Length: 112
Length: 111
Image (cartoon, rainbow over all chains, first blue to last red; front, side):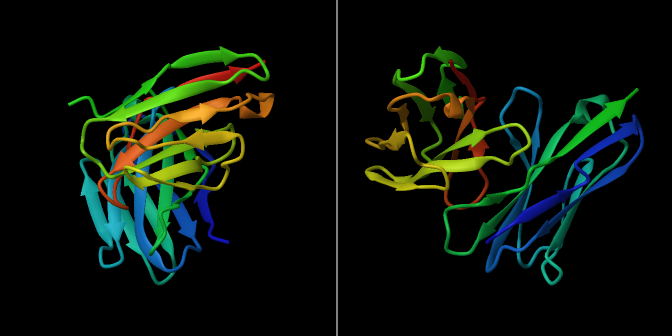
C-alpha cells in the first residue's frame, strides 16, 4: 500500500528562524511530489511540484528537495514569518493513477 | 478568475437527510475531485472525474454520489447523511495529474 509519512507532526519555531520538514514515501512507480500549505480554515495551496528528474525547486522562501532514490523529500523554510504558521502537506502521485497519496501534514507554528 | 468555488461553506444536517455540495471551476480543468479531511488524518479521496461524463470512485466513496455533466461543475451528493460523514469537504481541480487547485471547503456537521 502506498504511504506518505511526514515528520515532525508539529513544530514550533521563532520568527526569523529556518526550519526543515520531512516527507518519506513508498509510492511506486513515482510520478510527482507536491507540497501544499494549508492555513487554518482554508483549502490547501500549492507551493511546489517536482517530477522524477527534478531534485530542487524553490518558491520564494520555500525550497523543496527530492531524492527519488531514497524516496525522501524535504521542505525548507527560510527566515520564517508569522504567516508561515500553517499545516504543510506532502502529496505523492503514482504513475498511471489518478489517486494521489496524502501525508497527514506537519503543523508549523511561528512565534514572534 | 474565481478558481474553484464551493458552496455552501457551512452546513448542519440531521441524520438521514440528503444534500448536495456544489463545486464549480472556471479554469477549463478536465480533472476534478472531492476529498474529505478529518482531524489527524490526511485528505482522503471520495470520487474523481477525468472529464465530462466520466466519474470514478476514490478511497472512501460509500454514502456519496457524483456526476459530471459539464466540465465546470462537479457536485457531491450525500444520499442519507450519517454522523460519520461529519467532516470538512474539499473540491479540487487540475489540468491533468499535475498541480491541484483546491476550493475553500465545506464544513459539514451531521447530528
